[in-house]
Image 1 (cartoon, one colour):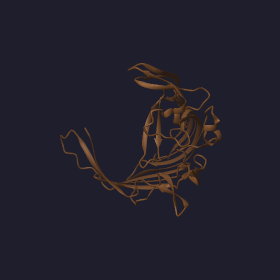
Image 2 (tube, one colour):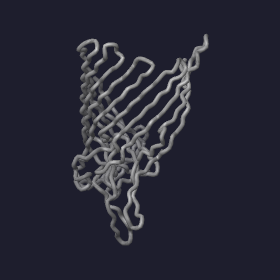
Image 3 (tube, one colour):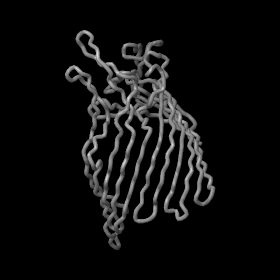
Image 4 (cartoon, helix red, strand yellow):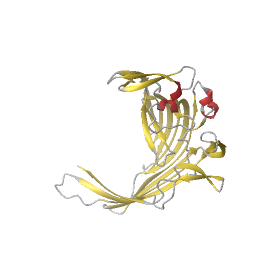
Length: 333
């Protein structure tokens, strides 16, 4: 049983907005300046957690868990800039902490020689006090960023299947997960709610995820590894048309996250070299040589639209679409 407490303190300027109107720069009626270490707003709550495990035999196990968590800082991300950037917004006068409740259950089975392990796990999660963005949100260097945010709630559920090989020269695992996550905005001003206040896929909604990892040890010194991942594309919002007012061109857009980017996939390769440890040496290490995205697939990150020959075109934007080599050295003492 945990109990958490959070205090948002100054210095900071907190605006008050006109009642009965959506918060905006134009509806600010007062701004209060808080001094250094002056408390602006506090939050607290119980965070119970329980995890149960029951062994059906020495090779079969059932698991059950529940937990509640509060997150007192929100990640505000913008994927529509030329490069992604993140803003961390603490809970305060206008933003409440995120509350998450989750239940999970699972079953695990080991083969008689414990060479293979099989698992199946499921979960259901609810979210309260999420933050979402108004349509056309301006997040960059915005001193009143709460005017660009909307309160929201949501839920998520999923089921994972996995197999692990832990013995022998060849080791590895394969996992498949099916998951769904939905949210809806809950502003009292329905005119600014997303998709009329209906549930829609969150940015993290990727129904299908498949990962496979393999490692083969040639000798005590050399090991080769490979990792492959295949995921559903994340939801996104497309431009669907255009109109002109006073000679200025504007785009119209689909409902929030009504479309989905192409699936993403990537292969990473690595070679590990572990030199023989010398006597009386108090530390040991190994080298890793490899390449990310070995076949240079251009995984989409976001979309952008423009007009070409008076036709609306939408393109998927990739940040890194080429193999990326790497070298690392790890040591312990």
